[in-house]
Length: 203
Image (cartoon, rainbow, N blue to C red):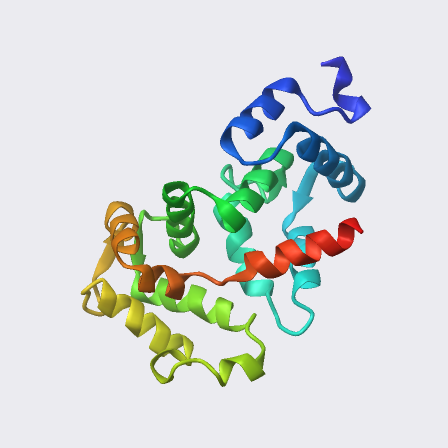
């Protein structure tokens, strides 16, 4: 384990990430170097993660959403993300394969981690998404989804659920796969913005 201090990415992690994400070895090594600059300990805290998210949304408040995203990727619940968890988070939130992405979305909405989603949990995540939509843009949303409550109702109706029902992971993934409207309603379309921002930072 002598090379951990040198800031090199271990071959095992590199191979794993190359296989499970769309990133090249070169991209991963570059990101690892900048990750270590920002997080010399090799781990990113929730606060640092929220800070990164905040820089993408100067006109809105992404704190609550960033907190939920962080929770869904902190798989060992130790309050930090290592480089591998961080890269998988970036990959899945921007361009993951549909099934993996939907499994992640389920984890995002399963706020208490009990394996099912309630309508209250849907509302909580949708509310955090609304915090990131500038007020101007909110005015242009369709009448039946221009508040977190209306949007949560709409999602719940698509699943054919009554208020006290719960949704399991299989049903969630299946429902979203067969209904593009649900997919649109459950996600915040930040990847494009974030990708543009990342491109800007490279120049």
